[in-house]
Length: 116
Image (cartoon, rainbow, N blue to C red; front, top):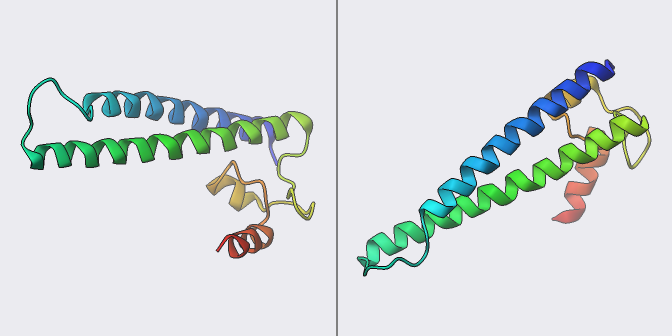
């Protein structure tokens, strides 16, 4: 694994997420739940739905940003690319597709089954 390329990829993803968070914060602010004038109930419902959607997307972006920062810490301490559960290597293809991946496919699938 090329550590320099992995760091660049993680930094690029983090920067992209930061831009998305900034845009989503603006979108969320553009659709306040309460306005200074009476709204048609349909408009109020639309604004609420758009606000909820923006909030959910913002929460997902923040969660992925945390995973990216965790991956950068693993890169710094030399454990990036190693499964947190079993210690085996995380396949390069998985890290290319999902650079924040902290587990091999087998251990991730096991965790996903346990959460259901």
